[in-house]
Image (cartoon, rainbow, N blue to C red; front, side):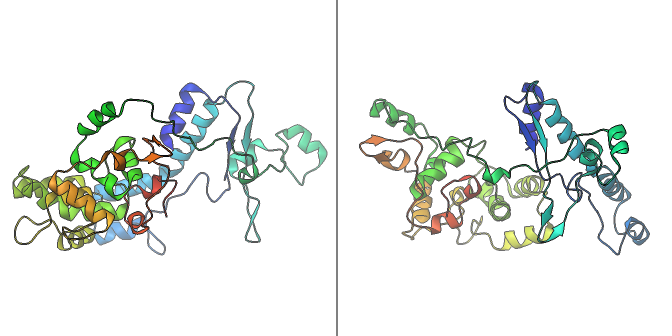
Amino acid sequence: ELRGLDVLGFTHAATDVHIANLVDTAFPKRVQSIQWPFSQKHLIRSHSAPAVSVEILRVREEAAALGDLYLFALALAGLSDGHRLTLSWIVEMGREQRNPSSLVSLLAEPSDLSTAIIEIAGGIAVGSVTSAGSLPADRHWPTPRDWDRDEAELRTAVDRLSVEAASSAIACPRRFVLQWALGPSGAFQASHHQTMLFGNVQDALVKGHFSDPQHAVRVTKDVWRHVTPGQRRSSYFKRVVKAGAASADWRWIFTLQGSKDGTDPVARAYQAAKGGMLPDLGQIAPETDGSRSVLPLLSPADESVCKHCPVKPRCADSR
């Protein structure tokens, strides 16, 4: 990720660096803003888009490769003295021969030429490298330590948690840990969760007495600007949190699943959030072999909990 490469550029790598997938069709990447057989001139002539939008598309298409080159420069800057840099590409995939990126070709020793030309041109000899999947593991799953503090102290800490956030532990302790305790934020990251939130948050703001209807509409349209008009319309008409008539409680947006009468784990989590009830200590910090773990190892037995979990992409035990 860009964030990780930024850090690499400042702190330098303590090990060798391997930059993979430097095939000419992937690096530097190319962006075609308007699909064939159309081009930007067709968009300009049709007057279907503002001039500034056409200009943004043009700059994005022309400058797409600069992003990859910037990341590549960061990786090179992060290489410490005495460590090895490996640049690789997959030579053949699906019986199709693939060529290296032009940057790799510039650094590599030319092939299929006379020895005299190769000696003058110079470059690095190209050889086979071991696939990353064949290398031994350089990381291991962390093992949670046994809880060695007083349970009264743990109970005091749990009592200070937000009920809406902590209630997710009833559905799955790992979800609570990843989404609220250890996550970078409480954001619902999956695209379908973002779409669900658009329609439900509007009226949740009104039902929770946080905003008037007009302000709620302005806020949600601004926050979910990345959601298309069609997705917004669909999300709004499928919402279950409504300012009037029959409606789910506004706290439903913390689970995005569940019902007031259901008995499944997510429904019980929603009911706890709605009723303002903190989960039991054993649900937030499960007890295993006589000791408590604040990082639950296993997901719940009910696989339906994983199906709609917003932190599923970040969970190593999701199903």
